[in-house]
Length: 303
Length: 120
Image (cartoon, rainbow over all chains, first blue to last red; front, side):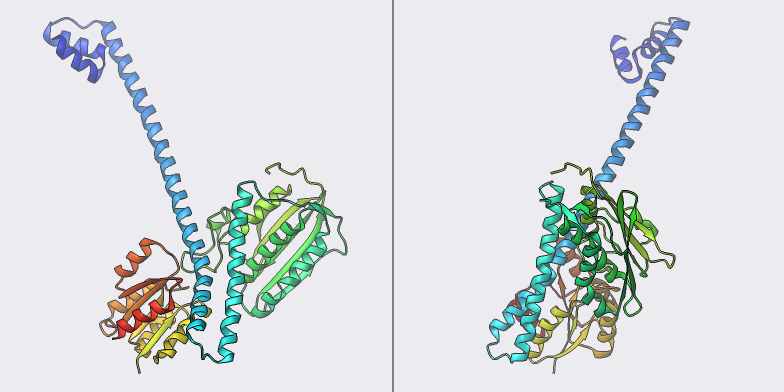
C-alpha cells in the first residue's frame, strides 16, 4: 500500500494519492479537508502546466527568431559572396586569357585591360563597403568632424554621379537654397551617405524616363536632405526593414546588384552624427529617402 | 560547327566566355537573362549551354528544369555557373539536371577542358 501510494503521489500529487489509496485499500471515509487538498493540488498542477506552456511558447518564438536571423545571415553571406565573386570572375578570366593568348589583337587587349581595371575598382568599392560596415558596427570607425557646407557637399555628390544618371538617360534636378548654415559633421561619411542614396535612386528609376530630385532645406536646428525618385517605390512589406542589415529589396534572383549594405551603413552614419534617416513616399509612388542632421550634434559616444 | 549558348547577365563575364568559345572554334549565341536563354535554346538549338545560376527574371535553375522537361530539348548539355559558393546551390544544380557545375571565379583552362570533354 505504501508503495502504491508513493507511486501515485509522484503522478498525481500526495493528497490525491493518499485519499485514493485510503478509500480504495483502507476503506477510510473522505473528509472535506482531503477534498480541499486535492483541489489545491489540482490548481497547482494547472498553474505549473500554464507556466510550462508559456515558457515553451516563448522558447518556440525565440527559436523562430534565431532561425530567421540565421536565414538572413545566410542570405547576406550568399549575396555578398555573389557580389564579390562576380567582378573577380571577370578579372581572373580576362587576365588568364591575356596570359594565354600572346598574339591577341591590340583592340581586344585594350578592351580586356579596361574591363579588368573597371572590375577591380568595383571589387575595391565592395570590399571597402563590407569592411566599413564591420568597422562601424564594431565601433572602430574613425570620424573626422569639421564644419561642413552641406549644400556644396550635395552639389559635389550629384556631380560625381552625373555620369551614372546620364548613361541611363535619367534627369536629376536639385532644389537647394542659396546658402545654409554649416554643420558639424564628417564630410567623407556624409558624402558616402549621399552617394548611397543617389546610386540607389539611379538603380531603381526606369531608364530614359527616370527622374531624381535632390532637395535641401533648413528645419529648426538642423538640415533636411531628400532624395526622391520616380521608380517603383519600396513595397509595403519591406518598408519597415529597408534600413536593416542583411535586407535588400526584390527577391533573391530578381534584384539589382548590391550588397544590401548601403542603407544600413547610411543609417549608422546619420545616427552617429545625431540625426535620423527615414523613408517617405512620393505622390507618384516613387521612393523618397530623407535624413535630418542637427547643426550641433550631441553625438552618440559609440567609439 | 558546334553551337554554344552563353547565358549570363554580367556583360564582362560574357566577354570572357565568348572569347574563349570563339577561340576554340565554336559558334556562339548569347542571352542576357533566363527568358532569353530559354528562347535561344528553343530557336538556336545549341549543343551546350553555359548557364549562369543567378539571372534576373528566370534563374538558371528554372531554365535547366524547363529544358529537361522538354522532350525535344532534353539532350542539350548544360554547364551551370554560379558565384554563390554554397553547397546547396551545387546540389540544386545537379538536382535540376545540370551535366556539370562550375563555381565562379573559374580557371579558364579548367573550364575550357571541361567544355571540350563534354563536347567530345
